[in-house]
Length: 253
Image (cartoon, rainbow, N blue to C red; front, side, top):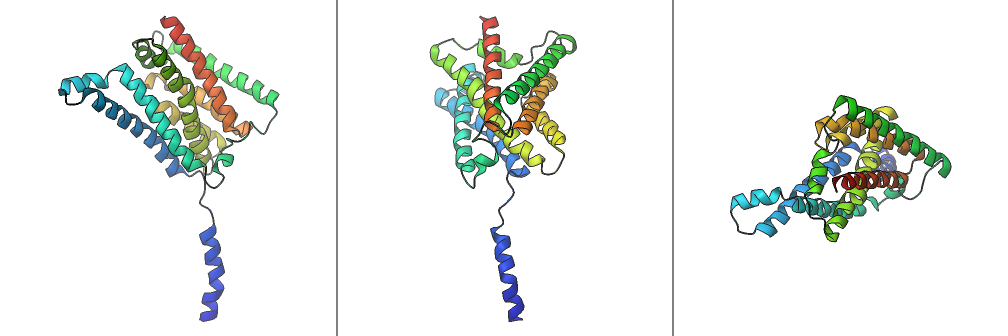
């Protein structure tokens, strides 16, 4: 009996050393949920700091204050990125997500593919917005919130950071780097791209915008699949959001 026990010990030790799969579905979903919880928590803290011991009616008004909402988004994004940095810096996870290189294909091919994919998504968005939901802006709620914020240099910088910098980094980490890779372990790659893109569109909480946002998610997801570089995806997502922000704010002014 002692010999059998001793012969099993190396196998048990090797099983204990087997690394856990990364990324996994439940942790990926957990990070997504955490991001939106942080938005609520950070906004709540800012409301409490501004209102203090004032009446409940003042607190309700503060929750709807676009400046507080904007800074709540900025604060939540910074906290999320800090937490994810500590999480991803372990066990070579940065490399596994493709955050340390610009892709497995040439720069020319990656650029051409990115242009084609984004152009196709923008064409779909134009057709959808013009003929399916005419008169309804794709990101109308966000545009209204930004338009109502006083255009001070600090507010403009905060808005640009939240939409054109922080959001692309966090969203690509969550929906392409973690969720798409996790789903790809269980379903074909197109299934993983479509499912992660649907959730990406769903969390924006604008039902009429789901098809348009999903088309962008599919474009980003396929580019990530082809290049293997999340760094490339983040830069493209930043450029897309910066262009959209500049366009909408230019029209608003």
